[in-house]
Amino acid sequence: MKEVKEKESKFAVSPISLTAGAIDEIKLLIQEKEIPEGHALRIGVKGGGCSGLSYILGFDQQSEEDEVFEVEGIRIVMNRAHGMYLLGMEVDFVNGLNNRGFTFNNPNASDTCGCGTSFSA
Image 1 (cartoon, rainbow, N blue to C red):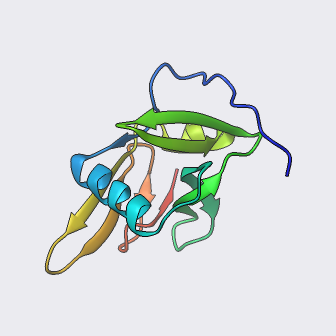
Image 2 (image 1 turned 60 degrees about the vertical axis):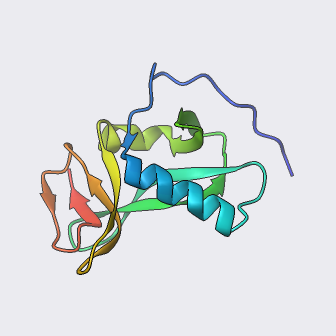
């Protein structure tokens, strides 16, 4: 497999933020799921969903198109082209009676769907 050299980010700090709840849950997932060495948390967008774009959140290897950030010891990779959709976004983790999972507070979203995982910009 071709090794990807980590490139300098154009952002001084991560373009997204993680709440304490999200940080705790991500670190727990890394331990429980035994994420392979060299993988990072991928945050991004893809076409689809009822509002046009859906969020990507999972563990993946870095690609040549990625920028790399670190938030509270969590390595994050994000495709450069996704930055315009995600700049300023906050990822949270909710663990309530009616709702459990990651939520996205995105100031770039002009419209969101009821499920909170799809948006338009």
